[in-house]
Image 1: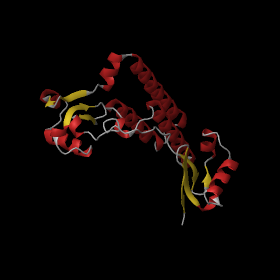
Image 2: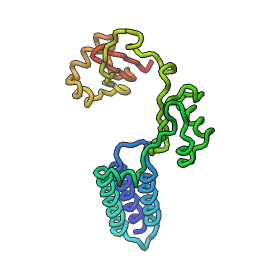
Image 3: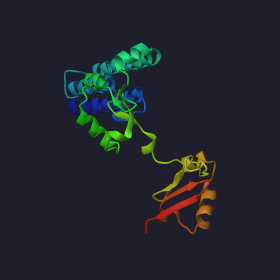
Image 4: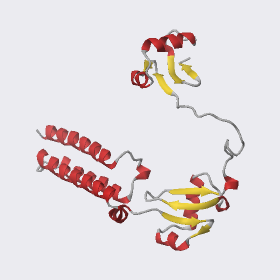
Length: 225
């Protein structure tokens, strides 16, 4: 009976983590604010305390998870509707550098040291403050930067080149299997795919590692061999 109870708790716990992840939105870990981290931390502690605690029945664990999920959802909705509350709970970005001049007060307020800032810049591929015009410290703890124009890579507009926008490539074959959802997405059929690949010289899809397709460039195919 204990094993069955633990199994049920683990299944419910996994489902709860997935629900909370959905409530927080499609974020990477690096995009989590401190408040988002607290959500997940407390939920993890709740699950840890109840999964192997035999005196806590499954329904009590489920009740705690539901209450916590409702609280999370409520706070997220309130934060979206109230700008002041959002800043209070999730903070706001800070401008650490403006027009090449560092704001030392904001750096101290956010506990950012100079070498720490330089490390964060190197992770962005910038090895000198000379290149940087503006720096923003985001609520996630990451930095966003704007370089001086002299240090930005040249664009097609600057070089006066005529370029055309292209749609992204679509993966139609993955490890010998047809991606039917992608075919539907572009409005094509399996018969169309087979005929097109035969024109490209590929008689069997089983031998294809992956096949990308775009309207502008056609197919790019790699086989297992």
